[in-house]
Length: 133
Image (cartoon, rainbow, N blue to C red; front, side):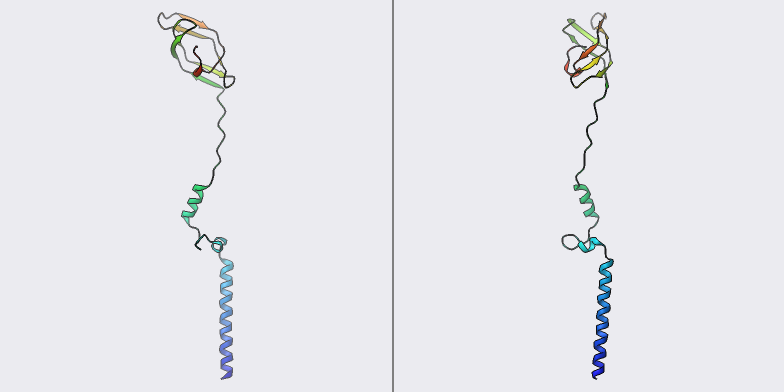
């Protein structure tokens, strides 16, 4: 009987070694994220990936440089220099700086009589901040 007890112990030891070997192989084969896991001991899922993507900071591009030329549509206004309402035709203006643009020579029309007056070109403030052609 004594030999049977030793045999049972040897079989139990072999089973224990086989079980430990299988567990070690399983642990080595599992992915790193499964070993680390998330809080609560669960593996990451699609919701976690979407949340990480949505909360990730993003970089912004610098603003584009201002355009070198800009089209100014035709407009009508009172010119204090000429003392009457005039119509300025549409034209292109070239940017010199943030405060100055180059305006071409313009044929300005008197809104009442239709007479044309030539206004010489030159450097002026941008169209949003000037009172003349």
